[in-house]
Image (spheres, rainbow, N blue to C red):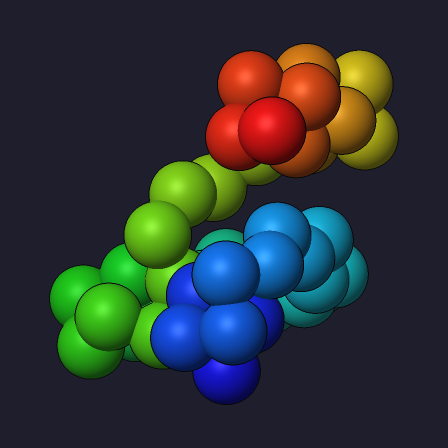
Length: 46
């Protein structure tokens, strides 16, 4: 929904298997290992 609206979003998921599944199915575009990495990705997306 965020991508369709032209927005960026940071989502938190604790289970690596769920992250991998969402990457495979296209619900996620990228994965970050740290908050700092996620914030850097957010800055790059602007």
